[in-house]
Length: 199
Ligand SMILES: Nc1ncnc2c1ncn2[C@@H]1O[C@H](COP(=O)(O)OP(=O)(O)O)[C@@H](O)[C@H]1O
Ligand SMILES: C[C@@](O)(CCOP(=O)(O)OP(=O)(O)O)CC(=O)O
Image 1: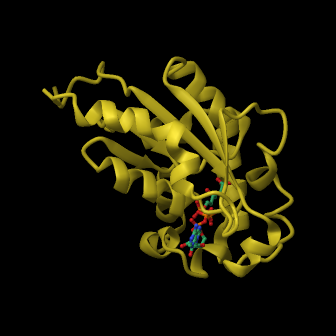
Image 2: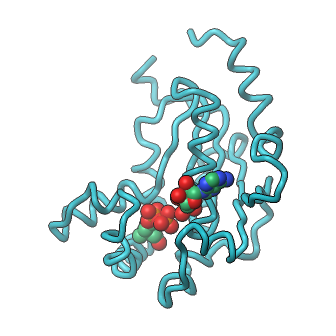
C-alpha cells in the first residue's frame, strides 16, 4: 500500500494568503487536529528552496526557517522560481506532493493561478481552495513590513483576484475562532477518519 501511487488523497486543501496572514499557523492547527497519520502539510516552497540552496550553495535550514536569512534571498528566489515555473508550471507542485500518502493534504503556500490549476487538474474532485486573510495592522504586529519587489509582485499578489475560494478564513484576534471558521473545511473529514479503519 505504501508504494501504491494510485492511492490518491481524499481531500486536498490548498491554502494561500499574504505574508504573515498565518498560513503556517493555521495549517499547523489543522494538522495537529487531524493528526499526522491523516494529514500532511505540503509546502511548494520546500522543493524550491532545496533546489535553490543547492544551485547557490546556501544553507537550506536557514532558508526554511522563519528568520531574516530567507528575506535576504527572497527576491532572487522568487525570480529563480518563476523562471522554473515558466518552463514547467507543475514543477514544484509535483515535487512537493511526491510521496505524500496521508488521505488529507494541506498545501500551505499556493501563490499563483498555475499552482491552483495544477491541483484542480490533478485532483478535481478533492481540491478545495482556502484563503487566509489578516489586516495589514495585524500582519505588521506579526512582523510584516512592506517590501517593494516582494509584496507588490506576483509571488504575493497572484491570487488577489480572479479566484473563487471555497473558504475564506479571517485570522484576526477579533474574528470568530479559527476552530469555528475551519469547521466546515475540516470537521466532517476529521470525524469520518476517526471512524474509518486505515487498513
Ligand atoms: N491566530 C494566531 N494566534 C497567534 N499567533 C498567530 C496567529 N496567526 C499567526 N500567528 C503568528 O504570526 C506569525 C506569522 O504567522 P505565519 O503562520 O508564520 O504566517 P505566514 O505563514 O502566512 O507568513 C507567526 O509568529 C505566528 O505564530
Ligand atoms: C521563493 C518563495 O517560494 C519563498 C517563499 O518562502 P516562504 O514560504 O517561507 O514565505 P513566507 O511564508 O511568505 O514568509 C516565494 C515564491 O514566489 O515562490
